[in-house]
Image (cartoon, rainbow, N blue to C red; front, side, top):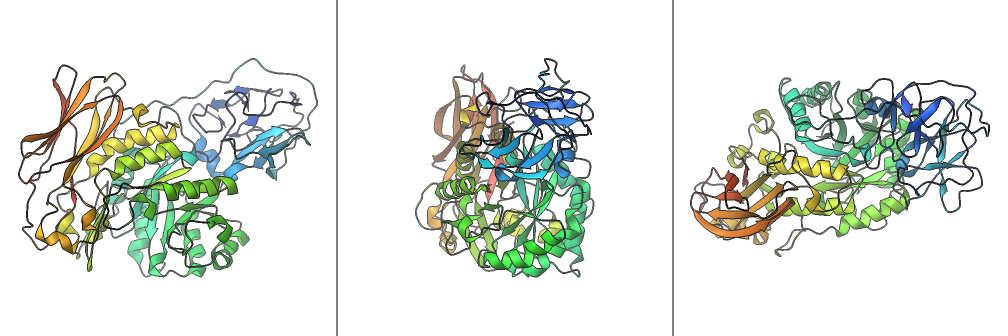
Length: 594
């Protein structure tokens, strides 16, 4: 996994007054983080714009919002350094600044950070902090410094990564993203076979995800299926950059005093996701439990064992959510929201709002915390007496646009495999839903075509892209998907579904075109008739097209400027006016461009 660290990379972002080159007297070179300095000391060379690596190591240049890593070989070492954070030269001091991120300074400098700057921190002479906040000194370097100028003009051999979409168990990107730009997929832990875990991990890697958030609702040792699944998934990710973390489902009433022991069982695994060496932990709910109890029952026992968690819970069930969240829960390291992924329940046909996201993100930035923003296509549930729908329509694309604009620290996709709520984009194993009503509305409804849109979006997010027009497909051909419900909203059974008034009969699409694709057009067809034609250009194009008709032949057609068909998506299921079964199935038929 990529390190959770920011680095000053842009001229004018770091302080330079009084900073001199230095001669390091004592050395202990190893793989680790680079030095923050305007001039490189003796024995080190420039790595990027504002960093230095020991001359014997390889510089792994950062992309947006990254720190440069100094690697022992030409291969990317970020995952290893993130798991055991240290400075690449033992003479340097390691500091912890914004968002808990590490950075390295010469011993005669102090580390500071400023939340108005998107960096972990920088190094300045004592007494020149100004309005910046002094960082926490984690370890003092062994070296001494003198004011002898030895600025280097040489450069370190850099490693690079090449974009790939091949079906392998590792993934590299055009610019290695920082861990603060990681995208996780929420994974419902359930019964499965050992041979299915590597398939899920491989497919998620190839789809572009950085890891799984493992939702577990039991801590019991007698639930061996739960322990097996978690262990199999961690083992399947061994040797890759794909990481996993636990997300405790507190809606099941889990005992906060037992969470730490359960976490410790898995957190030492090489595939467990860590931020600056601390195991990342999240939840679904738990906001009804006060901060004092979370701190006493969960956090402090782990601190006593030198394993303080990086705790980013979903507490949107807290009665005061989201206002003054970190004032009321000062022990957490960040916040996640489940409910912000969709419009609020109700009867109005309103688009999803980002007001909660903006609120929490601003609080997090002010408090030195992080925010993990949710992304989801929709919700539909029809089992266990629950009947509900949450938009839906173009919610997925709208959330993508909001995420790019806000650039949160993390993103969590809801979900990889939650078939019960319909918002799955990955594999749904029969063992996980056996004996339930879920197969009656999910069998034959494959959602993996959404991955055509998700993968380019995730790359854009990691690279700091803020405009959906700048999202690019992995090649020179369009990628995308269309989706529609196979039952009209006028069906007599629809009134049984909570929030059914929010739904609209439409074909929805999201298409990503290459930079050269000017003058393109998109035709939307329902029951063999064109219900809409729209111009399209480079980047993400999305729309809800009203007029879905009962019948066969639902299509999305992409045409070039000459009118020739470049690609199309064709539905495999007819649209019905009334349900032909006891289930009022509002699941989506999702098909990809080909």
